[in-house]
Amino acid sequence: DTGVSQDPRHKITKRGQNVTFRCDPISEHNRLYWYRQTLGQGPEFLTYFQNEAQLEKSRLLSDRFSAERPKGSFSTLEIQRTEQGDSAMYLCASSHPDRPDYGYTFGSGTRLTVV
Amino acid sequence: QKEVEQNSGPLSVPEGAIASLNCTYSDRVSQSFFWYRQYSGKSPELIMSIYSNGDKEDGRFTAQLNKASQYVSLLIRDSQPSDSATYLCAVKVAPGRRALTFGSGTRLQVQP
Image (cartoon, rainbow over all chains, first blue to last red; front, side):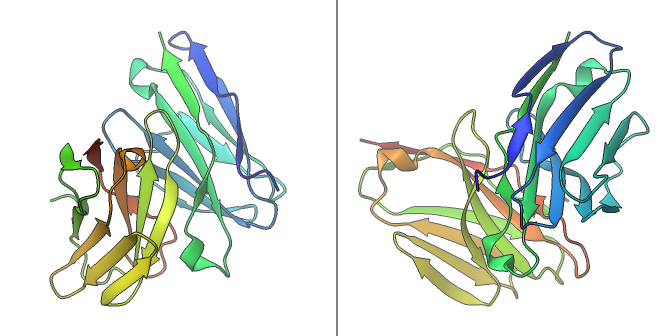
């Protein structure tokens, strides 16, 4: 098991373009989370999946943001019509339901820069 | 009031000293508490979790939880320069919610 994998590691896009990020969680983890982190701040929760069901969304997740986990394995996060304020590190994490002590395992993140 | 609050620091301690990091939370029904370490440019990694009042020790790290006072702390004994990082407190703020709420982190600098 290679941990949580995120792709791409870096993305530079022009304002107004759409971007999509991918996350592959640890295989036996059925819970998957997306967070956003800006400089000097802690990670902010965006959304949570249990298997393929999206069970929780933050109010931070505007209608320009959409996330999917179609087969309960990998997940994608799409941002439409990007704005400069979307520039951040987008972190994916996964967890195992029977091992709460283990908390989350984070991926390396996708750093988005909107120019 | 933020749900999870931490002093941003930096907290500077000499090598070999004890570093004490604190975190307060606002929701009395919070159940689970975690400390993560984040090196600059890297993603957070879990150090410890704690659920019950009292102390929990793991190597050089001790987590302390006081639910009545709504604070959780992390002690790092024999601090090393490699411990220099930002330490994030994370709380599961309500039953039924799976997502953790993170504080903004405390930057620790261990001086050689």
